[in-house]
Amino acid sequence: MPDSAVPAFPAEPATPPAHWTAVRKDFVEPGTPCARAGKGHRLHRLVAGHAYILRDVDGNERPFGPICARALLGASAGLAGVPDFTARYTASADAGPEAAVSGRRTGDEAVAAQRLAAATRYLLLRMEKVASIPRIQPTVRYAALEPIYADYRRQGTLSPQQVRRVLAIERSPATPAALKAMPLLDVYTAYVQLQRALLGADRLDRQRFLRGLIDWLARHLMLTRAQIEAAGLALHPRAFQGHWG
Image 1 (cartoon, rainbow, N blue to C red):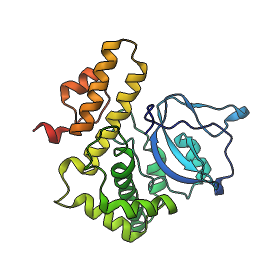
Image 2: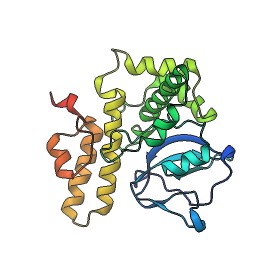
Image 3: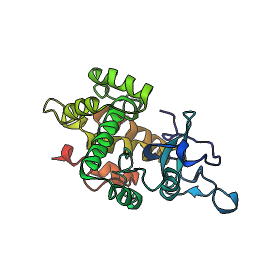
Image 4: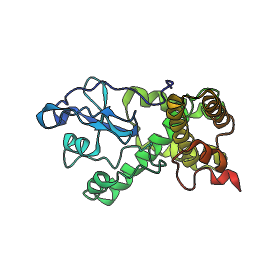
């Protein structure tokens, strides 16, 4: 994972709707331009620091705001089946397009989309998002998920059988609580915010403090309430509470 914690995307006008596939909702650098030209062909910026990531036919990924993503994908396309890596960020309240789209799906389709999103998010958290944090616990990356992850990187999706397998691993009593989906999502969310804070820190003592928190997070897969408050992080109200007792 790069030092900036979130990927940088080139801004360019969008191609026709049929050429785009929704990949995920994820963090981007605050102020990143939306890749869809607005009125007058001027780009607008994603000031909230998160976006829907869409992939074009050439495999290039671009960031879009929720309205632009929905417009590109079409009214019948689903954002409800997109893994959301921002769900534990307290300022992320972007449910409008997802709720509207999921309401058009049948019950079975909605459940299948939600299961695919949950499995994809868990797979990427363990094999990529959290696993790539410097000095992270080696237990995060799981050998049993390696072939599924390799297939996902080649194909861009998971089969129903792979969805069942990934969710079974996440829900298994043998999987430690710290390696369940929500705790790992808290780790990823905290890491992104700590990296942003570090990039904006001018004082040396503040930089050292934030680097220390990043190292602690990597070793323990959690932060204390006092650490969260001292760093000024915007996390879910119940983030890491399973560790606090």
